[in-house]
Length: 639
Image (tube, rainbow, N blue to C red; front, side, top):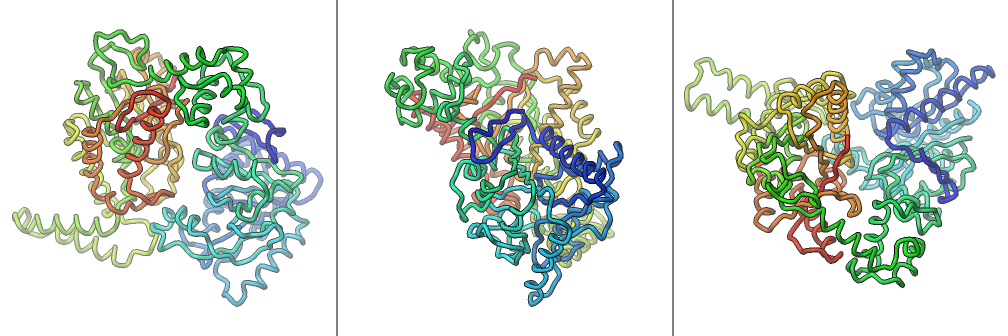
């Protein structure tokens, strides 16, 4: 864990991952609860919902069950609630808090306070005033836990919320509603309003801890920590609090000056580290809008890199070194070029051909994120397998399920496959269920199965287009953590890891590709990657010999691309290959035109994937390297 409070306007703690950060915060909260109990006092906690604090709550539950942490003296006040919202609704924060914390600890029900989404509109003002009075009557909030939205909101204090704002009813920003769309199975189902503590209410807490995880939060974290206080980014008002702590993982801290350009913050940099040098030089070239080989001593001196120049200069020597490093990342042979000198290539020449296992969290991530590389691996003769880790069934619209159920019934009738019309009966059950289905309601087992089969069929079609026999080379894992029928999934379990280990042992790949795209807003990519990493590490501990000859490459693409200084293998894509990649993506017809869960980017997946591939190629070109139509980028995991 690294802390650089002198570099920002708010103290920042950066951890290697959200797991370690969450456990640390949970223990901090537990210590406060115990301290207040020893003083025979209540501990008043302000609590948040969303994906950021869930692991904190899980650790608090563990501390209660295994280490005797009691919540008898805890009084809680939640930040917000959608309006209107029934407490037993799937999206209700009452239900969220019960599922993640309250049902698993010994907190007194009368000590739990969550804004009531069922009150009548004419009662809202009085209700909000009473909520503030209840906080004051409890003695004020000792520790307020926060997340942060992409608009910079804390609680539901959207842009325009002033530093003095109090608990009130607020209209949600369009971006906030878009981000919540997956929880409600469509933006049209997201409430337009919410009850929220005000910024002023939050700032009255004695201590504030804000959590942010993942690349998707990096930009707004930078504005919060380094920008000027403004109501357009309400989280910036936290700079005025005397006891606030921002807790980040590495990904969420990526845009902070101390991480992205530490030389501009006056922080010492290790210029003996090649990764740091490469990061600085690629940044300088992009800042100066010049190819690397045209950078001069003046460019270095005038942009905060005089120490690098003094230690490793002249500029020409540094330029050549970094240019060669970037040039050596480029390869048209992602599986290794046979009988070639591979000393300066990102992948080994031997063995050739290789057994390759591509892990795809959803049934389309393989072709969206590394479709060009997948096609090239197949074209170059490697034994390529694709493992679809989840069914992806919740990402299929209801009308698609009806369409396929109807097709099966018509097919059954046309070819007289059965005399008692079981397919027609199935269609009727599916249609009747979906006609009365409420927004966000969990699908019936039959509907879930149909939606899973739709996505499986699309994945098989994409495999065939890529030249793979789906019966031999496609593996549908259906990891149990995913199969809840809801956006909210179960934690990664032993069965998930064991299924992954079994597949790895069966194929024994010499090359693995996995999704390192942790900006996925629903968390599936993160869980799937964890399953792979834990499986590989366990197999390594067991002494599996085949792992000694296995390399793991991490791809991104649908949500965000690797930064230039991170890329270790860059696979060029020609115009023809980009067209083939697009056609492979089009095989996933249920995700075409309007994906059910597009996340913050409303474009179709093929559009954002192509834009990222072309952008990466353009950046290489601007640095003075060869010009390509597109590039897919990879980083190696040295397990």
